[in-house]
Length: 390
Image (cartoon, rainbow, N blue to C red; front, side, top):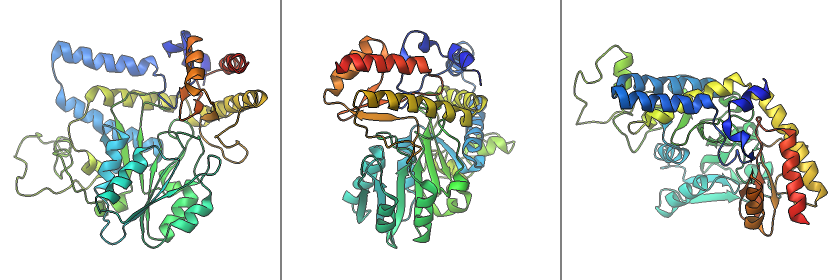
């Protein structure tokens, strides 16, 4: 992977020091050009709906390859929050009514379950508290029991940047007869992993962070042997058996016969989570983002990210930073370094004036270099922080 070539394809890097990929990754020209091309073609020649449906199929297949799954195990939806809601509506909570989550999860991956508790669908939601940015594995051992239906965690915390021991947690959950759902938004595009190897039952992720793709599209993975047991409470016309994509791929006209008005049988594939028509432009962008990810090897990516994190941490230690992010020696994490800042908003604003982009989160500054960043950019940030500290 040639970093100079990659940086040339990301125009924003010419005008700023961008260290906020945990907020939104910078798209390469291949992503934005593909999105522009489909909008331009649409404006000049009209809708090409059946062609666009096949883009959804390609998106499923490419996402499956990224996470080590089959295309039929993937559904394409508008966002991770929609993905989580679609999955939540599909799980049988009639016998087991407890969900275990981490306090380090992104808000939706806690709020959703609490709302279900408030509605009486769940009896309990156990939020495991972190210690210094990490939830100890012992907490999962203690809290996951025979009443637990689901364990729902983020692979990498959006806040502390810590990486969960997903395979270990999956083993604990399965031992107790619970499913494990993983939000991989801050893992996918940072380091390689396999849903099968990690024992993940359901996984959700979007594209606009570390995959450098667009907003407005996400994917759900559900293990094929579990699909029959994931029975959605809600279906749209794209989620039924014999939907338009299934008809088209079977060589049929998508509207050859009317859709049933007396029953609603879910698709046998993860298409059951696809409620309505997709935003074609963003699906196209997601496809190009995945091509970009494969072209720039995920293993090589994490080597660069890890080195940048080490430089960043070492430099921040010199100015006495107090970290929420655990050290690399104890937790490999993702691409996030978070440290305390009493005047968080002022720090972020002063960096912005120097065209250095980071995020403020709850009295902390979050810095998230990607593989397209350089050591010189880390040094520029550290110099600026030293000046602000003074």
